[in-house]
Length: 188
Image (cartoon, rainbow, N blue to C red; front, side, top):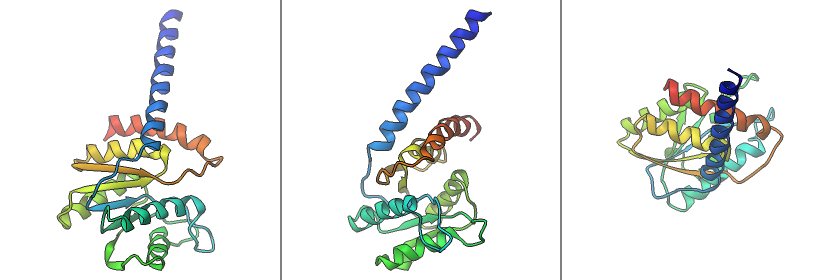
């Protein structure tokens, strides 16, 4: 019985090791081509209504893709902070201040997690006759987000990681994403 548990433990360690290699591969190797929509996952807005540094890197990556003509539309997802202001509003204002047309910005203002952003993005795609997307998030989130979009039958899913901004939160974000990947894989 002890040998059986040892084999199971080794198997799980091996799976986690392979997953971490894939997480880093997908997270640090962008795969972009001209697409219908750039999807920017929210992150955090400061109490003074400014985008956090981490969120700024995501928005700046989306802006780089938008200005590089990879897409003419951007969707910003939201989170209702405990201070009762909407992240999507701050994200949209940031982009508009940098000369993105308001008409080129879609807002996901219904839910506040990866799964619901994907469902709402799918609605935007269908409603507007769009098919392809580029995901913009951080390296640790890319693999789960991409897999979930593919499971939601989004036909073309590119991805671009925001510039690296290592923070203490990466220590819990990476394990959360490893577990989250398998939860989404099995549940969704």
